Length: 167
Image (cartoon, rainbow, N blue to C red):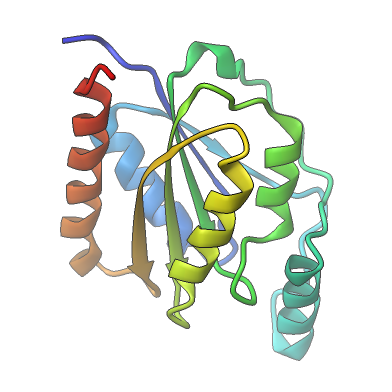
């Protein structure tokens, strides 16, 4: 069986996406990259929803803290995101514009309290499919609890299935 190099890349605003990313990375023995905007939107009140939602809907990008990752060493990339206004947040958009993922096996997961994660994953898949095929997705209801752990483990098994499938 071939050894696969996997990285889990994620942005987490309230900790739910981070919980899932850490579980996947631990189960897959994968590297972990947390995307950190240089300036976060408001964390409380209506301003939190207005700023975050508006920037996500407009497809804005933010400046991210520098990360030093050579994506050429990975054949599998797992991307995790919260849902903001039915789409992915600016930090994920910035990441996608800053790296080349062509030829990578891509897996996506989203966390959402609103239930719009399928819509966000569809938009993220559309954005990625210009260069990649998204192999599988996972949607997790937030706030995340240990009930989601079984779904996370099943998602990891799906990743392993695709990795072992030498297409």
